[in-house]
Image (cartoon, rainbow, N blue to C red; front, side):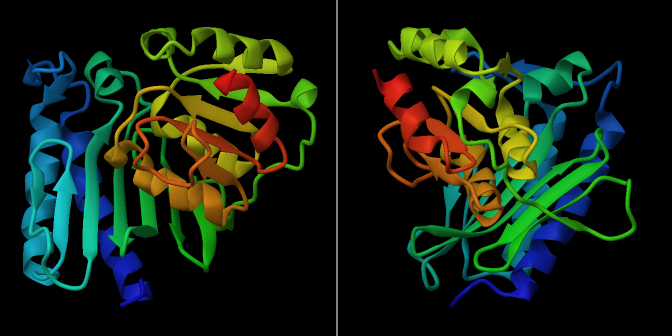
Length: 264
């Protein structure tokens, strides 16, 4: 069954629940932080959000599968190919350090295609969402109504703003020279990684965003938001997927040229 307004409403409701949990523990002096086997941090808030959202989905969408960063997959093969993808806190390292650039990411995948995506960043007072075929929107507290998102019309890299993740992942994948060459071609480069760079592309205030090491839960919601804003989203092999382990998002006009430079 195709995504409906009910699916979006549920995703937004889940984002509200997540926001209440994450904001209550943000910058808490007694926040419990652990280190996962991959040496990345995880907090009590990450775990609490994912547990709570899983419980809610089990109640209202019992036939849908769920994949989450902290607790893996459940219900695979059930229902009609519908799967919710949850990143309870994208940007946990920022969360731990008290930096407000983090978000809960929620996506619905149907038959391998992401059809609903929500990125909620409560410490920034911002939220972005999209439904496949129905456009992308955002709220930021500056207007009473949600505003539609549209990527930029920048058509040359020399005029483009590039957002990139840290250099370690690029070096690990042997692509550091490529991303540095892309940076040299662009007018301006800024890096903060995580969901934020893709939302900037969807808003039309950045033109190119790329990461070298990412997971499905990092990208599923951003993919549909960028695409519904008129942009192009692929892995570094040029495949339009959130499951490739790396990502390039652009306004579409710059995609092939940026992709060629990074791949070289």
